[in-house]
Image (cartoon, rainbow, N blue to C red; front, top):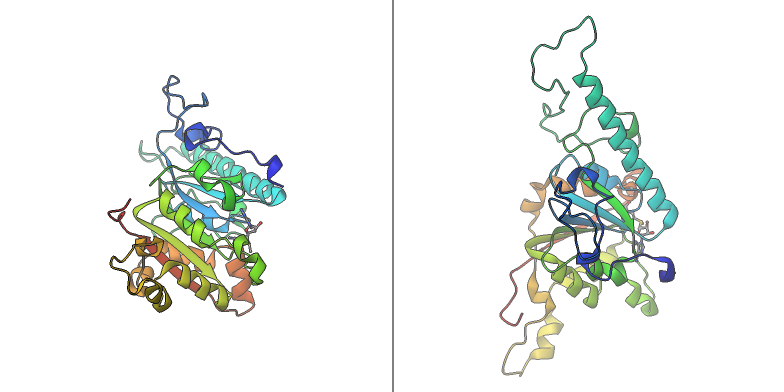
Length: 295
Ligand code: SAM
């Protein structure tokens, strides 16, 4: 239950220092409202219901300078992902040490860091999630930019992230419930939609993917004005802007050019399962527009 969930009383009270040790500000005097060491940059990307972390591990080398966090409610899943990230970091460190240390017979050819950076492929270096622990490549960012926390994102998102802090939010294959009484329990709803708009900066993106077509339509209805919405306001002198006016669906053309979409479609554990079962995947990405006048 939520009783044993730890969450900060405000974003300024969140201690991120143990999550991103490579990004802790060297100035020990810089502390936040809870007395925790500050980071040199803010967390910008959130994976809601991250599961085993395939998305984060896939995105880490694509956005090597961006701090990303997965939020997961199940303790054991969170523990697995945390050790997966630690293992990847340790392995990267070992590979870097090995590459930096010349063997007795081989002198290094130059003074440059002789690391094996995998930037030669035009395809981004995304580790295969099943065997990433066995990789021999050094990846940009060395997985220092990803972490995971245990949280109920339906309740405590504004405790972690301030207004306009985020550039991307991912909601990949959430468990949808279709009974009417379960509507409130959905990860996409009118009130959560408003929370996502609050945390995302103008121009920021909210990514969704599901294999359940009915749920996909539910998502579309919650981010786009419907004909029945217009009927409701017909006859009113002033068109009252609502939360749906803050979102614009991203075109297929833009999606094709966004490498994050491929990671979402093929690297999350759930997306792999859907691929194996020849299931369909429905993608919808929304751009958060500038705040309207009433904000
Ligand atoms: N996104 C991952 C993927 O694509 O492989 C995992 C998908 S899995 C079907 C849904 C995940 O959301 C589960 O790991 C579940 O524990 C988590 N979850 C469900 N409700 C949640 C909540 N309120 N807060 C955080 N995580 C939640």
